[in-house]
Image (cartoon, rainbow, N blue to C red; front, side, top):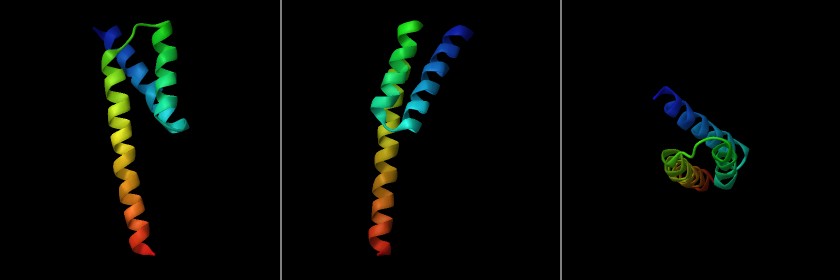
Length: 71
């Protein structure tokens, strides 16, 4: 069980690094590289794009609204 959790965390970490490098496509590419070498993780492929894109959309909408009202 520990190996399975470790694989999920490794793939989620690769997805987080991908978001740090740019956007969702980078995260998916990082995850794809790890899953081609190790076991695939369905949970990571579901969580990373959905949570990452929703987080980015909410933060962007709040930031844009704040700066439009600030001007």
